[in-house]
Length: 216
Image (tube, rainbow, N blue to C red; front, top):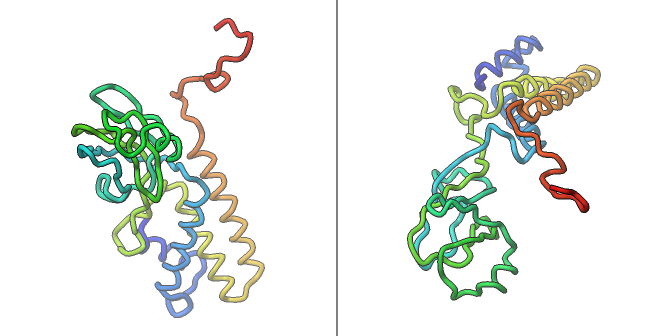
């Protein structure tokens, strides 16, 4: 569903004309509803993103905005494909105490500070890393042709949110509250299904932690 289809569906349900609810108002509420839904979860699977980052010798810092096409919101893992090693995430203080500002070599750890990835130690040679993380949403609200940038199971919730706000403008408290509740239920149900562990995921008992007294 794009914003043109969204407007049409909202007007079909409410029977409001463009004089009653302009495109500008509907688009504003649609974006608001979308962002409320996106803020429910930091790790939506439809925002998963894989990129590469080539390290420059002597340069330890890489802004997240410089990785890939610049649309990455946050980094969750760095993998050195040559050494088959996942770099370990540590805090800046630990990195500073361990390596300082002069140590160099093949990075084995990383920190995140001020939307920048810091390598520990700083790279001594050009190394390409696989960067996995979560991207920012596409700005679908600026184009009639762009699909709403989320799982289609969440689209109906955005419709309900906009309708609730429109009825609020019409001072119809009963219908506004009804659609607000419908929005909350729709978003919650879709989130639960989208975030459900997939059937092919391996079973990990005790979260992979060996308990005291265990034989394994």
